[in-house]
Length: 542
Image (tube, rainbow, N blue to C red; front, side):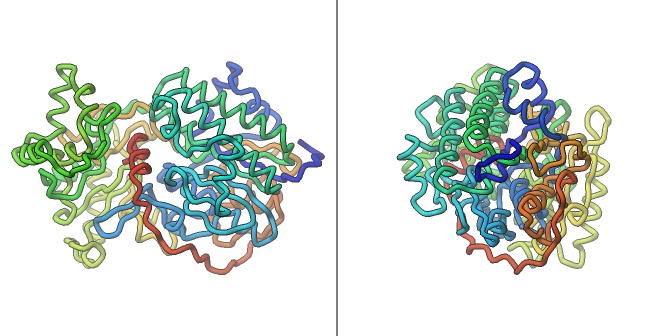
C-alpha cells in the first residue's frame, strides 16, 4: 500500500464486535485471507471499549473521540422523564471526525456507521447505519436513490431483503450491497477519508449464537468486500477498528430490577398500568419466532383485555412461558402472540412509584427517581447521595449462586463519565464481572437465572493498522476507542480537538491540539420508528 497513486489516504474498516478470539480461528482456517494479510503486514492489538461496551454508545464515542458524558449518548435509548425513544444522530452533542475533517477541505465517504441518522452536512457522502430507519435520509439528499439505481438495491437491515429472516443468504447479500454502495460513493466523491462499517459481524452472534457456519459466512463476505475495496482504491493507510468484543456468557444472569424490588427500592405493577419493563417487551419467553411482536390493526382486542385481567390476578406471561416451556409449547405459541398482548400481561416496573430502577440493561446502570429531575421523583435532592451510596454498597455486596462477586465494579457515574451531558446517564454504573455475568431489566423471581443470551459483548475489541503513515514496529498497548478519532486527525495533519478524551495511537505522529468552537448539532428529532425498535429487539437490546 505504500507509494500509492490513489486519492484515498485513509480507509477505516469498522468490524462491529470483532476481537482476537473471533478473528484468530478465522485466520487459521483460511476464511478471511485479506483480513489476515492486513493484520500480518501491519501492527495490531486489543482495542479497549468504554463502559458501556454497546454499539449505540460506543460508536459515537469512537467517531467523536469523547466519552458519553460529553456526547450525551449512553445507550440505544434516550429518555424524557419516563418516556423513551431510540437514539439518533441529533442526540450526539459532539462533532464526528468527518465533519471536523470537512472544515479542512478533506472529503469523506461514510457508510453504515451506527447512530449517524439523520446526517449533517459535510464535504462528502454518508449512508447511516443502525438506529436509522430503512430507506433513511442520507447526505447529500437523494444519494440513496442513486446508489440503488447503480447497485440494484441497498438495505440497512438484512430483514428488509427477499431472503428469509436471519438467513445466511440475507447476511451475505446485505454485506455485498454495503460494499458495492461504498465503492460507488468512493468512485463518485473521490474521498481522501473513507469509513465503511459492517454490522453483521455483531448481529450474527446475537441472532445465531454459536452457529459456526453462519459466522464464517458473514466474515467471508466481509473479507471479500474489504479485498475488493482495497484493490479498487489502494489506500495509503488502512485502519481496522471494532467498538467492542464478543464472546460466550458462561456465568449468571442477574435480574437487577427484581433485586431492587426485594431490597425495597422498586415497585412493580401488573396489567399494563405501569411503564414497560424493557426486558419483557422483547425477551419475554413467549416472544420467539416470526409473527411475535406484530401489532393488531384495530387496537386492543378481547384476548389482550383478557391477558390484562389475568396479569392483574398474577397470571403473567413470564409464568405462562415457563409452564409452556415444560411441555414444549413455548416457541410455537410464542410465534402467534402479538407484542401488545404480551405487554398487557407482563408484570412491569412502576417507575413513578419506585426509588431506583434499571431502564435498559445495555446502559449498565441504575437510575434514581430524583425529585425535580423525574416527573414523579421520590428521592429529594438532599437525600440523593445517601440513597446512591446505599445502592452502591448493596450492589457491591451481591454474590452469584457460586458465591462469586456479581460485579467487578459498582461505581458512581462520575467514575466513568465526565462532561456537560453526564446528567443524562445512569446514577450508578454496574460492570459485570469479566462480562461473563450479565444483567437484565426483567422483573421476575428469582433474581438469578441462567443467561438468556449465550453470547454477548466483551470489553476488548481489536485494532489493526497498515500503511505508509503507520509505524509497523510500534506498539498499540493500552489503545482505546477514544484514540481512533485523534489518530484519524493525525494522519491528515489536522489539529486534534482539545476536548477529545483519547490520544493518537503511538504508531502515528500526533498533531497539536486546538480548541474548536462549540458543536451545534441539529435540533433533536424523534426516531419513533417501529422497524428500528423491532431490529433492536431482535438483537436483544430492548
